[in-house]
Image (tube, rainbow, N blue to C red; front, side, top):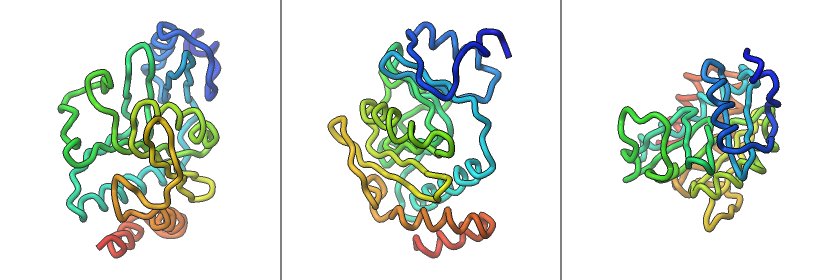
Length: 212
């Protein structure tokens, strides 16, 4: 790790210009890190991904994609992709989805998704183990301003999903998805709980029985 990297605090928001942020993430190219920029502050997340985080990540992606497929909803899912408004905002959510007519919005071969050119995703999901409070606070404000329609935070510790519908740069708690009507958070939470006790193929079979 370079001297520049070791001097930067991680897993917290620090004051930085866009140029300083670009220099910081350039030094992280070979590291497994996530980066965010919002209101003149940057956050670099260097914590290693835990086993529990990784499992819930897979279960959620499978569940959302399966639901969309069974209901005939066009969907393009993205895993830890960078969405950027240059000079203003930057984020790398764990999971994002473009749905229905927006599913083919981003052309194949795109690197960083330029939000000055393309719309924000319909659904953003953060898997939270050590970053729960930040995911519920500052990052939620960031996604509200970006124009994301719906935002879920998966609380790994408690197998809980805290979901928000977003409109007019605000948000409200929901128990059923509005961008994927009929998909209840309680079903996803039960899938997460089951994944603690049975393997993911069995969880997938159970989800299939619930969605059909």
